[in-house]
Length: 390
Image (tube, rainbow, N blue to C red; front, top):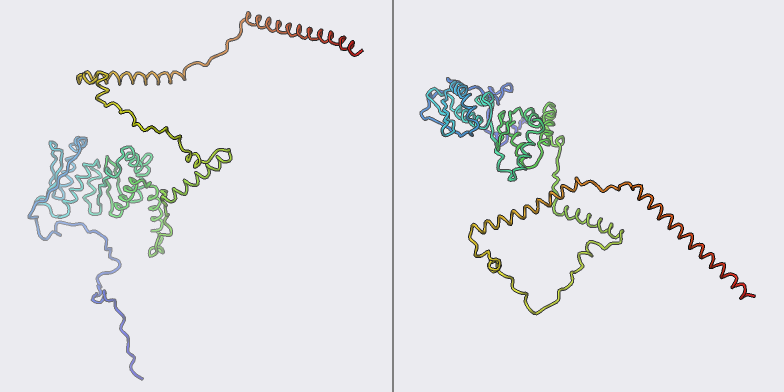
């Protein structure tokens, strides 16, 4: 028998040159961020100075002046210098010869940004940690109508801050709604979810839909069997209530049909028949209509054309005042109608009662006299009829 030839396993073209990594085992956390220490900086001190500055609103000046010593102390431990300029209303951070972490200047920049947006010093200092990131979401230019903007911004907070608390618990982030921005601090994954919720809320999608979705995802993450499966079948599918043009037309036609049926049942013509009735034709005249006087002609007739500027203004003010007085009087009269007492029938006096009884008695006597006369006439007419018959 011939030798059995073993077939070599087929290797993917993209993985042909990959080699085994015996040091890369499953017990190593690839996402762990190790703290950056001074000995990790092999190059030594920086050759160039990096600096960032940001403006802050006037109402934050008092608070920043009180806590600036704490800000300086927090940044000094990382070798960052900071300055507070109360004249120009700005904060600045810069690297020094003691700075060893090249990324800490960006963290310091985020810190002063958060302080400017209303975040407390105790919370803003946490941004210096490598595991914490921040995001400042601008919501001022999404909605133009001010009342609508305020209403939608309030939706993010919710009644007694319940919606905001739910977002913080589900995303493990700190959220602060201030003016036209939303400041967020937390892990990168949470920042992404909060940004999605906030922007959707400003686009008229209620936060409760996203909150429900996050709650379901959190429960599904606990099940190890679903780690490799799609979660689409478990997540709720929210449909938009905005109708297409064709759907709107169908509904409009249905409403018109219902109205027509009701009108036909009442014996009235349909809406289409009423609309088809043409207005009466005007009598044709070959002559064009009389030319309307110009504005200047009307002013010349009334004498307004010759008035001076201040006299014209005084005249307009008088007209406006007169119109306002008329409208005020009408409204006052309308309001006063509610306080007008209804007409009450007064009880008849003794004399009126006697007079009414007397009139009733006289009418009764007249009626009896007429009846008595009629009876007499009938009696007279009867004997005459008997004689004629005989």
